[in-house]
Length: 419
Image (cartoon, rainbow, N blue to C red):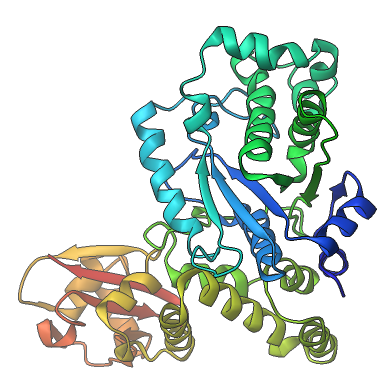
């Protein structure tokens, strides 16, 4: 398969402006392409992965990707897919976020490749110094109000309201495409399906300002879940690419819990496994869904890609320890990852009677219940069953002096943190 055929097989092409023209261009020369990422937070999340990994697919096929950080457009706010006006962030905050995003993008794109190294650009470099007169005369004159009003990103906001600030976003993003076309011979822009209006506006600006120009636009689909819930969201919020915001273990768990109805689609979208490997996993899913081989492959590929081999090994180790109850095999750092969302209790002191701790930490409602649970074998300390009602916990019962994990029954975990 050529590159476009592979993207089609993976379901990664939502819309493309001139498929045959693009296929011809890709077969004849090394093409420079870009996708933009606005710094609206201090980290990218998995909702950004599809365009990032599509840039990577183009680079692996011999083309040259540019990751554009929206240092300027991030100060304005993209109305696409938004029901209301964004909160504007301070310039110094956006600058800081831009630097964080640059670092994250370098994990996925090869900036050292000999023939087609990826590049980072920041649209603040050309928009930041642009005066309003030049903007209106040289760029704004090419955009008709009726043309802009017809775009879905604007139409969807007419009823609820859209400021001139966000209304102008389309023009600024169009200028990005023009500048990259002029300065880098960038011929293709890719983005999420909600960016179609902005991408085609950029193509229109190039057509009006550059003679005999030929550029292209391609969008990847909106990632959906079969159960109707939003992709990339968990009870704890967004799934971030920053390990400090979403630990590698949480990241691994997100993917391994993928619905059977979604897992093959996600393997095609997000991994670099071959057609044959994915088809084999699809066959295993149909024949033995209980083994969850496809989900394991997805979780392993994604965690390794985003966080590296060591983080993957750690995530698997934590998962297996929690499944088997072998808590004592984990380090304190691994405990912190694996028990981030369980109820916790801070204790200060050298030793404490287990029964008293169970009541103080509200694991059980009373001493009578605590004694009963211990006697009946319902209480586990660091994975080991304790049936001695007179048991006293000391620092020897903690993991690296930081934590003790208490389990009540089969699945109810509690974390004791030592001050």
